[in-house]
Image (cartoon, rainbow, N blue to C red; front, side, top):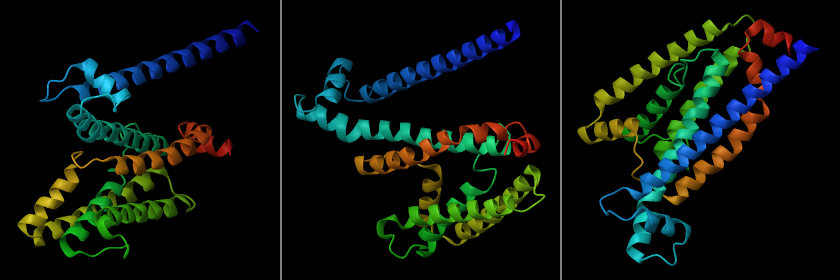
Length: 245
């Protein structure tokens, strides 16, 4: 009984430490967000920036435009993109049981880059109704198709994590080769657009895009959280995870 109590106490203390770490991280995130919005060439006082965030109508028009239309969308998009990358990395690391795994390891990011480059160089879109989202739509579809291919391999009997990673690496080199071919045949302007897209930028962030990203996170994160026990079982190894169902 004493041993069971000791184990229970250790578990509660560990859970408390995790909760405190998450709370401290959230506090630091909010602080970094406020500092990012306040710092800039305008040299606005932090108190005025905070007042503008919580009450835009009473703030001077110039300050309101700078905070709400320029700085805050970029800062919020950075937070959302960070959440997305963190969630994707955590899922990959759990599925592969490897702390170094990420979407690049399995060729998903390379597939997205190839899809975007295909739209930039040739104008070919997988979604005919994509319109202004031609590049983004291509990148998403190619990443999704690559994920489906990898999922099909996981459903085959006898496929280990090592085989799964090797298939991902094969896809990585395949899409990198196709991407290099598109870059070779692209014009100077198109090549700049490809490089700019692959590097990424938050300068075009707006509230519409923030709403889309927030909606995706609102769907994905509860789904991940609902399967946390299954994901935890995967970290114990394939045999133990299979024994747990």
